Length: 73
Length: 220
Image 1: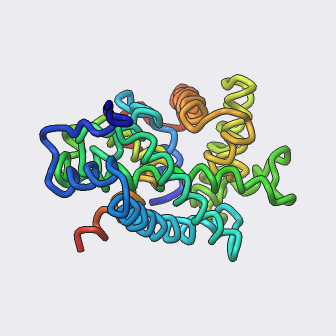
Image 2: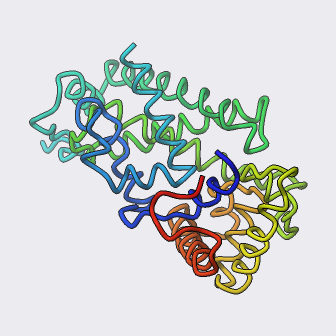
């Protein structure tokens, strides 16, 4: 990916994006394999859109996912 | 006699057995509760330590301070979890719900810690670093010079003063969003919303001036 497309991708906004507060409120539901699991993106497109665009929330998502996966291993 | 915190111990009917057991034991008293708290603290601490070590370098913290931050995050998360047991509605497994607390604690504490370093820039604007942040190659400057000049003009003309401040801090100066929220006395959600609006305005300006395509595919 070159700089042009990186900038373009960064500036694009998704109207479905729910924002940090709602995404973090629902993060445990989004991550939990017993509730959303692999269907999380389809079930919660607004959260998925947010996690793609928000660095800090994306990091929290990855951290929670890693913690849950560690539990299952 | 009315049980203490009776509302806390109403266990949602659809819980998995392990989650129900956590709620039952943490909602009780005595040695079993103490043992469960110790076990949960151990689990939270393991997550806090891993996350603190992973994110610490970006937030300019390491060593004993980082370890202390992890311990504080685990302790605060445990306190929040026990205080909010009644809010657990069984939408996920109990441990997934509990882990969220410690992950968010680590984020918040790292954001607050960022400003303890005296050499962190905020006022200075490091526009020269912008090409590198997006991966523009110096050898091909003739191709992107006008684009970034147009972006900078749009930052100055299209954004409100607050949006400009947030954009420059996060994108130009590479200040973590969480840390900027602390500095502005705001919160992650509000700062993100400002950045969201700024991104939308800037892209619209670049599209209007022919630098970016007005479609959903992006330019490669």
